[in-house]
Amino acid sequence: MKGWVKTLWVIGLLVFALSGVTFAQQDKPGSKDHPLFTRMDNFYITHYWEEKYGEVKFKDEKGKDIKVEGKVYQIWYEIKKGFTPPSGLQIIRNYENAIKKIGGVKVFQEGSYEIWLKLDKGGKTYWVYIDSWAGGGKGANYRLTVVEKETMAQEVVADAKAMLADIQTKGSASVYGIYFDFN
Image (cartoon, rainbow, N blue to C red; front, side):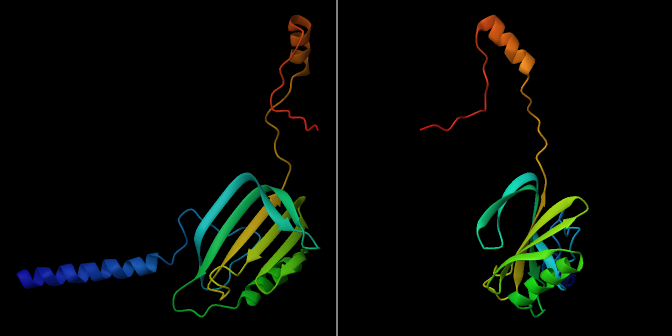
């Protein structure tokens, strides 16, 4: 009887250990592809980050840094074990061709591993960056960054009437968060 129980334990441990390999190659819980793009075949999401309003550096047509503000998505993809990874160039060309088919353009390309794209569609401007150098440029993983450019929703309001009342009663008004650059 003891031998039979030991065998069940060994089988159970093997099943548990092997299931970890399978689960490790599934998308990170709560992650998703950006609605503009599908992913490369045989890749899964390892990291996913979404920010309601942020700032990301992109490149303009001349390769100079520019800052783009809006809703930020950053998604890291990794090739599943047992599959041959595509080249870095193959990854960025796939995204370039996909965005061109829906009216987007290539803004700038750095070597065979990085590309910056832009799309104006549906009243929104999308800035896209693909870095296929992650993992040493062997195509084993890549990062997709998308910024849906938008103006930040203003939440703080300066009330001119309240300031005027302070000036009339106190002779001054406090204004916070406004800084002046002077020499």
